[in-house]
Length: 348
Image (cartoon, rainbow, N blue to C red; front, side, top):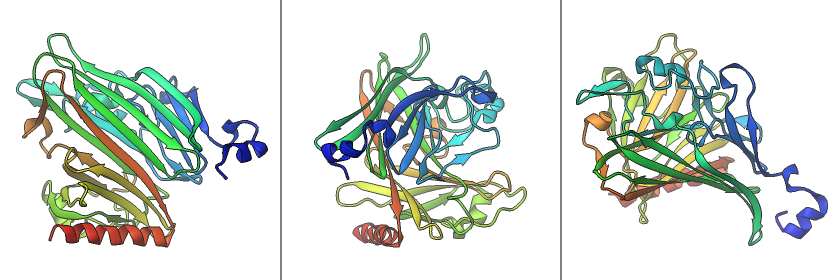
């Protein structure tokens, strides 16, 4: 039932079934964290206004799909970008945005120290807009805002983000426009850290994506390379494994990576355009208590800023579009697997 007149005959106010509202957490390290809480029927996600409009979680029909690490839900902290202490602010979430100056761990490059996964993930949004309205027979939900990474006598990078979905939809679209508003070329690093967690992430969860190259980061990853696409049982003190993938694309240049839980018959597919986001990093941790997996569309290799890096000319813009799609049922999962085979065949 999506016709406005028919629907509103039984639903006096659309907030009953879909919409967006600003809310604020009140206690613990999350105290003061403001969110734009979106619910569209099947999906619920709070966009953190104080942390790059990233989604703290995604729940589908009440089932949590996302990771919440041991530090837990939290807003901005004095240690967010403080060297090795910054790992205490990695809460996971459904996605956190790494960049824009760097995406790697805390390290010094050319005499300058860069924080864990960059500064953008803890940058608060400005010029925030929220709306929900009927248009062409659809009830649309939109949130937008702007984040800035800048310093005097340094970079001036602006990220404008729009998030959109519709009532009854199983899709969420993030559109990012990144602009260099400075007068010098600037390195551009970005990585979308998309995280799966329990009860969606369980032993046996599979990754489905058209990978044509999988490179392990180190010896620990090399030891687990044969099982990169399957989540194993948790093991105490197991080392994390990180892989760099190159994905095949379809005839329109689009590609994807998906988590699939066969027991729940649910998949979470992340779609993007390969020409603007050429790689995908995979993070896998089977450590007991740190049980996690992430699929991370990126324009960087393992070395991030320290390696070969994309750059933006003064006032040049770059646009990314990340589409989250929920798959429900065996038929939709099979369609995704068929799509994966077809995309791989296009490269042969």
